[in-house]
Length: 369
Image 1: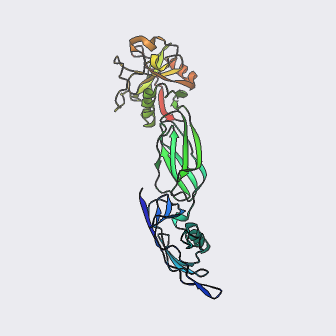
Image 2: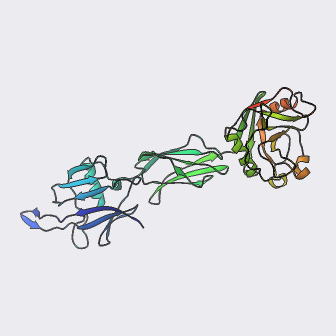
Image 3: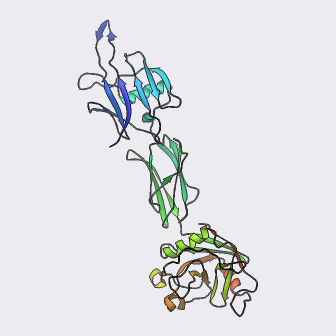
C-alpha cells in the first residue's frame, strides 16, 4: 500500500508538576505517518488511531508539534492549508499505553485544532453526502451526476448498472463533485459514494428507452427505439441524430400503402455525406422486431449489410420485409405523430421516382429521452 508521508514529530513532555512533585510522563515520541485512507502509525509499527486522508492530491497537510506540557500550550505549525497557519493549542493526553506512557491520539490532535479555530488538515475531516442529483439521464448520451456534501475530497464515487465507469469533471470542491458517464443500456444506473469501504449514500436513476423527435414541415413525429433488441441499428441511428445529420433532409421516397423513406438527401436533392461505415443487418428473426405498421426500419441496398443513414416508416404491416431479400432491420416504433406519417404517405409524388412533388422536409431530429 502506498503511504502518504505526512510526518509528525511529537517531542518528549517536559516535567509534569502535580502536588509539588515532579513526574516524568512521556508522550509517545518518534516519526508518525498517516497512511492513505488508513491508520495513524508510529515508526515502531503500533497503530494508535484511525485517520482519514481527505481531498484530491495537493500540498502536504503536515502538522508539527513541539514539546508539550500538560495543561499548557504547544506551538503547532500546519502546512498545506490555505493559508499556512501557526497557532498555539493544548493537546490532551490520550489513554495510557502498555508501557505506562500516555498517548496522544489523532482524535485529540483534531479536537485541539478545532478548539483553536485552525483550518483543519485533511486527515481530520469526515466526509458526508447530502445529495446525489442528475438533471437528466439518457441512453447513449453523456449524463452528469453531482455529489454534494462536506469533506468529499477522499470519497470514492462509483457507478453500477447502465454505466460501468465514471469520469470526474475538473473544478470540483470539498462540498461538490461532478461526474459523467454514458449509459450503454436501458434500465438503471446506481451511483455509490463510499469512504474507506463504508457506504455514505447511493442513488439510482432510471435510464428509459431512447426517444427521438422528428420535426417535419408537416408536423412532429416521435419514435421510441429498442436498443436492448437491436443495439447496432439503434446506436447507428442515434449517432446520426446526435451529430445533427438529419437536419434539413427530405423524405425522398413515398409509396402509398407501403413506406415513407428519408434520411439520405438534403433539401437540394443531393445525397448527404460523409457517412459512417455501413452496419451489420440485425434480422427481424433475431431481434423479434418486425416491420409492422407504425415501426421504423433501416433502408439499405441489395447488400444486406449496407445500411447507413436512410430509414423508413412502415405505413402498413409489411411482413415481406422481415424475410424477403434477407430482411430489413426494424428498430423502434412511432409513439406520437403516426397521423403525420400517414399524411406524408398521401402527398402527391413523381411518377418516375416516387419523390413528393412538394418537398416534405425534416428540419431536425433530436434525442429527447
